[in-house]
Image (cartoon, rainbow, N blue to C red; front, side, top):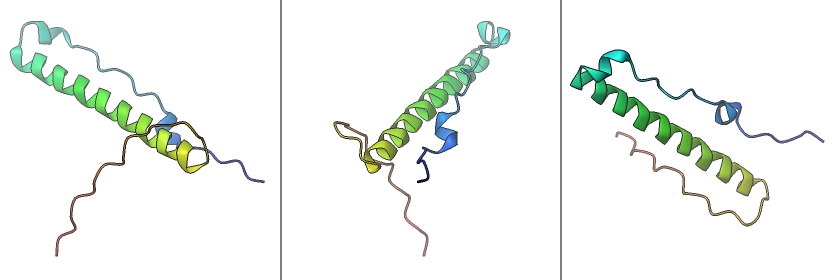
Length: 76
């Protein structure tokens, strides 16, 4: 029997973006840091959703997983 594992990318922990010193003096740098933090958080929760769906697909009960993101329509 082969063990089943979730995607390794979903188990990798991404470091939280560090605020650069110039963000204190520069509005643009502060905004860039806010955007980086928001993206970091979204990627983390997206991974949690994928892991939840993976566990549900592999038989775990009692989960309430978010639906997968909608794919954009294909051109043509």
